[in-house]
Length: 119
Ligand code: FES
Image 1 (tube, protein in one colour):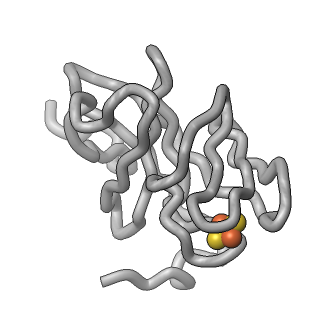
Image 2 (cartoon, protein in one colour):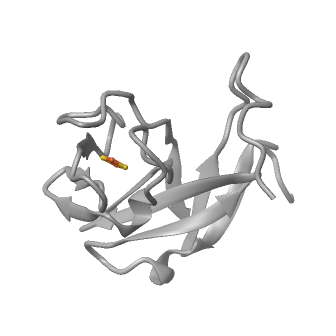
Image 3 (tube, protein in one colour):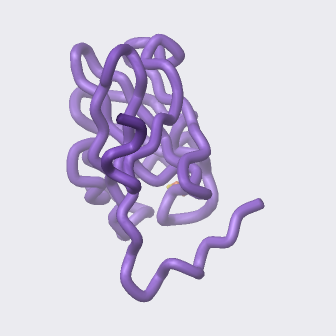
């Protein structure tokens, strides 16, 4: 009954993320930005691929989020960098709302699991 899928994690309550905004959650040792756009939620790595800006502080336009530091835009669905100065893709995570809770699946990445040590 408890956790049928070990890679699934409850990040928090959906109500914590206002529509049109993002919020950072610590999930499975990773900082993950959750964005709420209308009826949809998206989950991506919180750290911009250009430098270290917190993407959860960015602003949403349409299906994109713009980095709060230098304005690079990323596709919320794919994490793809759509404008400079960022060129790297943000990792995305499957996210769903189950009984009002943000549920994120974090699969281990091959070969990069030990790269981002966080306290
Ligand atoms: S830190 Fe995000 S575009 Fe520079």
